Amino acid sequence: ETGVTQTPRHLVMGMTNKKSLKCEQHLGHNAMYWYKQSAKKPLELMFVYSLEERVENNSVPSRFSPECPNSSHLFLHLHTLQPEDSALYLCASSHLGQADTEAFFGQGTRLTVV
Amino acid sequence: RKEVEQDPGPFNVPEGATVAFNCTYSNSASQSFFWYRQDCRKEPKLLMSVYSSGNEDGRFTAQLNRASQYISLLIRDSKLSDSATYLCVVNRNSWGKFQFGAGTQVVVTP
Image 1 (cartoon, chains in turn orange, blue):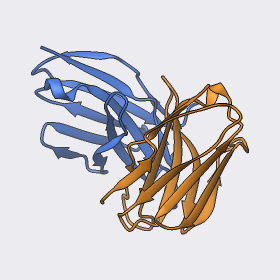
Image 2 (image 1 turned 135 degrees about the vertical axis):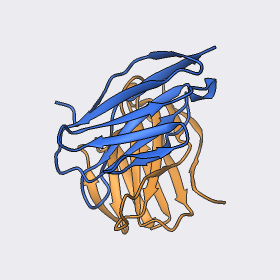
Image 3 (image 1 turned 180 degrees about the vertical axis):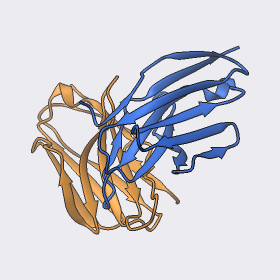
Image 4 (image 1 turned 90 degrees about the vertical axis):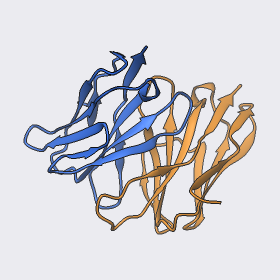
């Protein structure tokens, strides 16, 4: 596989459930990101991991818990979510330290909280 | 003030016409700039990076104006397949904190 892959593609969960989103990148990048995209809103940066260390946490509620076990994998653990958390969750990766590095995105997980 | 601002559109463009739109950014220390394209319910994909001297990729031309803090995208000879939302992206530090605009919707009509 190449690029950035996310699973699952679609997820419906109740407010009391616990689930995890998975992201895997095969590009040899050293930074990974979680973004949230709600309807009619710009992408919101949630977390940034650089060399497996979290370097950014954009005031995200604690019901979202990221995990980066190695440079190729990124998880977003979800628990006791609210209906307003329904959105498209996008994972991205990039190569830091390289001029004009761009971010490559996975296809996203469309999350519905019921 | 939002860090990256775009006209949401939609820009309704006849097939074959030219369309151009801008994006403004607030942080003068921003280092790199990109245009991404996002189709409905899909992930954003890189359209092109934007370089200081301006750059062209086929029918697409991007410009950067650091003094006025905006970037632009021009699409010539529009195709129906160009219909999408175009996202302006600014990277303002060395560890890749990409900031996205809300996007400009372009609709190319036959």
